[in-house]
Every structure is written in structure tokens, then in C-alpha cells.
Image: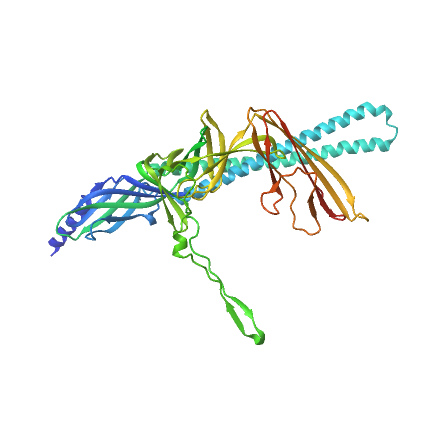
Length: 541
């Protein structure tokens, strides 16, 4: 009996000892704003019974609680019975510890900068006080023969002592801040060394992962083994390239900049990008009952309910463009998932683990362009060329950075807000040298009413625009006046204001004019308005 048991144990341990080593390549990555879900895939011919595999190459920093394995396409005859993973050697620090230490270093760096700014401000104040003190001493020395009373001399002396007293206070503050700064720098130095030590030990560590798989069929089965896990250290942000052509056509590249420092390289993988934020609590807040007392002491409970969108509303998509604009050239997939969006890049990409952004393509499409000249002289005395474009893809453009090109090359960068599917957005192409804008504000304050019940602030904006181009143009002029809902305050536009203006949104106070201006001519525009406030009001305009 003992011999049989010994043989069984030997065979059991030999089975573990001779487990097959697998290197499973990364095939798919779903990137969030602070982490990534990595999926590795490999096709294996599974023998009948139980097989044990050792996976090599999994990153040390993956989150163990999210590690899972599963098979596909085996009709439930091949399944994963267990998966275990551990770090070797045991000198390993958790990813959470690295994150907390990095956050603490960032906070202390911010505190260090604040202390340095304080030192700079105090030194400037000290320099000013020293300058005043020297000027005072110089003045006394020049007027000492003319000082006739001890009282006057005493006042001069007190002035000098006041300057010196303030300077001494500043010097004490500087000394205390300097001590704080040195202590902070020492702590930062220790923490940075500790972080470097953690990273070096993590890089030397090794993850051991074992998977047991059972094939209940009588014959070997070839199927795909998937290993999925979550790992911190990656992020992404949307970015766009817009190329404007003279043919009133534009080419838009919808891209993403990805930064990943997970410790593993993603080579030739399918990249997806999620707008979800897993680090935030996913649980829905609870709604409490509200008790309303009735006569006689009885109570009635009222409940608020969450309304759920109907299936028709959830599946409803934006209307597709009907203006004949050019359709999409390249478009990745998009999926709505749990209140967020998942973008699928149409191309495979390689993103190494390093402190550097790598750019991938999400979509590429063309749009018609409508040009418009716009000036806001109250803010900037210039005329800008604006291009109105259309999002010709079936998913939204997220707010992000925008690189602008024309046929002549790169002209600058800007940004765009969130743009829904098939929605329109504006791109500024910069100021135009063919126009000159003059602006002057005239202010007048007086009282109105028989008994002076109101203070009146009258303002007149004098604007002129010159067109030096060979073509006749139309320019949109935008300005604003105060808007108020307070009944005691009145805002009125004078009849002398140039006609033809419209209010952008009712009661917004933002007005615009569409001004035709011929080649080599000048147009003058006036905006005159009054703000009437009660006589005892502290408001001033």
C-alpha cells in the first residue's frame, strides 16, 4: 500500500515538474485612462485528460485578482480547471505601493515649487524694502542741514527702523522657508531612491503562472486558449489632424495618443480604447425615502425612481448626413458599453513600454468646408479665418487637441469640444494679414431721472475694418453687452448702433453683424449701450 502511494505521489510531482512552458503572445489590448486589459491568445492541441501549462512572460505588475483564463470553440469539452500565479523572488512591491509613492512624490514636488515661489516673492519684497531704506537714508543725508526739529529727525529715524524691522521679519520668514525646503528636498531624495529601488526589484522579479486544463473528450482537441488580465500604467487621449484644401475640402484623421509603462511590449496587436473609468465606484447611489408629516401624525412615504431609457431610445443613432459630403475612407468600430464608448482601431499597432506617446489611427474621413471670416475686436484686433467642418463618422469626436495643416504645411494647433456623430464643428485657421481692425471704447458716466434715481454708464465701441485683399468679402463681427436678470438694472442699446445685428442666443448679450466689405475699402461700426443701476448700488461698469 505504501509503495503504491509513493509511486502515485512521484507521478503527481513529475506531472507538475514536466508541465509544458507556454509563451502566449499579446493579441488584444483595451486601454482605459489609467490601466489596460490585456488579452493573450494561442491555439493548442489539448490531449485527453488533464494538462498542466506554465505560462512565461506575464508582467510582474498585473493585478492578480483580475487574472483569468478560458478556452474558445471547444463545445465545453475543454475547460480551465484552475489558474494560479505568484511572484518570484518574494521581494516584490505591489503596483498600488508604487502608485501611492509616485503620487506622494508629485505632491511634494508641487509643495517644493510653492516654497520656491514664496522665497522668490520674499526676496523681491526684501529688495524693494532695502531700496526704500537706502533712498530714505540718502534723502536724510541731503537734508540734514535743513532739519530744524528733533521731532522731524525722530520721524525719519522711525521710518528707517520700520523698514529694517520689516526686512528682519522677511529674513526670518526666508530662513524658516529655507529650512522647510531643505527638509522637503531630503524627503524627496529618499522617496525617489526608494521608487528607483522598487522599480529595479520589480524588473528583476519573475511571475510564475500555472494553468490546469481538462479535456473530457476521448480525442485530442485543438482550440484557442485565452489569458486576460488588468495592468496599471497606461493611458490615452484623443488627437486630430485636419488638413484644409483650397478646393473647400478637408481631410480629418481621428487618432489616439497612447502612453504605456506596463513593463511589457505590445507588438502587432489589436488596440481598443475605452472612455470608461474603472477606478471610480460603479455602484449606483441609493435613493432614500422622504417622509412627509400629515395631520394627525400619520406619515406618507414618497420615493424617487430612476427612469430607464427604452430600447428604442438606446438603439437610436444620429441622423446621417444628407448634404452630399464625402463619406468615410477609414473607420474603426465603436461599441456602447455600460454608459461608455469603446473605439476599435482598424489597424494593428505596436506600442513598446516606455515614457513616450505612440499614435494610432481610429478613423480617417473627408468633409466639405465652409469658410467664414470672424473678428472679435473687443478681445483681439484681428480677423480670423474659420472653417466649419462636419463629423462624417457614426460615432462622436471626443474633446481633444487639434493639429491644423493647409496645403502649404503645418499652421498651428487648436482644440475641439465634444462633437456628436454627424455634428458640425469650427476650426480656426489663424489671423489674416489682408485685414486691419481698429477698436476704441468710449465711456461716459452720468445720472438720470428727475431726482437722480439712477447712475448711468454709457459705452460706445468704435470699430473699423479695412479690407486690403483683391476680393470682396463678408466678415462676421462679434461683440457683447452685459446681460442681467435683475429688475433694478437696465441694459439698453442706443439707436445709433449700427443696424443689422442679431443676438446669438436670447438674453445672452452676445451680438453679431454680417458685414459685407469690398476690396480696398473700410467699414465703420458703432455699438452704443447704456447700463442703468440704482443710485445707491455699488456696481460700476
